[in-house]
Image (tube, rainbow, N blue to C red):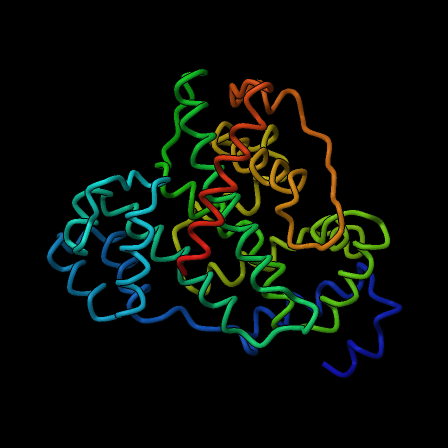
Length: 302
């Protein structure tokens, strides 16, 4: 790490392979907890029923609490009748949703507990990630209702993908805090967000580093597809509508102040993406206020 601190002034495209190699070597890259990994494997292999999944989840008290918290949030259909058991959550949400929720809440916990750059705000990152997750899920329902959009991914998978979309930034803050500080200063100087600053420095997206972690953790391929495709959804090979939802959610989050930067970031909204999602531009302020309220409530309850 010392070498990187000494070379902050010379970060460039030629250094990306060194950074990638460090991620691939898994130096300091955290492991997926056993319970979350077993949930993913059991569902992907189709070898476990609801009772088996319940036993796996209950073996991890933190995972149990988080699944119940997400299942009872209003954005996930929680209402006056609360889900009080893991079995109830599985029956209500379905196996794929449980897998996605398990992954997303674990990543949020990972970010909160990791040793990162002092400049990295875990709370702002969490708020931004949850905001994008909630809004992505809502926009997918809008696209389905207003435009007849279809996706092989369900609403809670899109929620989890939205939560994970900036995982690469968090991992850089943990594995290379000196680089994170450099990217942070560059983004602030350019009045942009960290993803843009990283790409302008290396000519590569930071999401490609997050993909290394996702593949090591053996998470579903759909998360990899989202990370690699949401920044340019109209040119994606598949799932264009779903990726447009994540893209629009991220940009609306940045424009509404739900960035993990402490300076204003404004990005231009792509009219074609808005049209593809089927979102009425006049409804955007109300949608943002609703999402903001749910995000504040959810984070406060963590």
